[in-house]
Length: 139
Image 1 (spheres, rainbow, N blue to C red):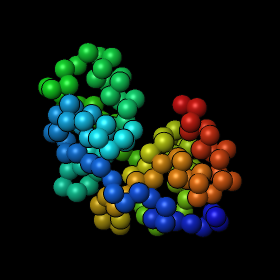
Image 2: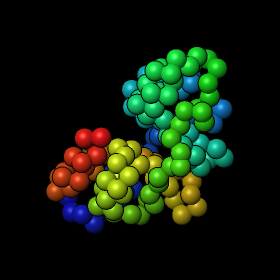
Image 3: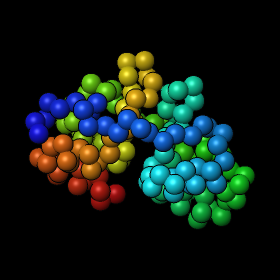
Image 4: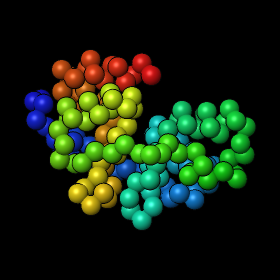
């Protein structure tokens, strides 16, 4: 594929989300049910943070925090790096490399969540971007 492919062409549109005050036990259950390694946290339809498996392990499990008493906003990564749906796949890859992230929420011009793209989707869309995305994988 050419590097002028936009993020909206390859993004996942059915993004699993939780609210800021969702209990972590429920967050983990949703991640397991849908086999997701990241879930977005939203408020009023706009993404406010992201919780990855790594976040759960480091900020909750390793810290021995009771999963029934902790809510999503206490664990999520914030500030959240997002990309406009009309950005190119190459722009997404460069942004992910810069921030050393593997998941990138996609928003419309009003900042509303419309999808998510990950490092694998970038490589499938444009294999020439593999060196950039490989950098993200080493983190």
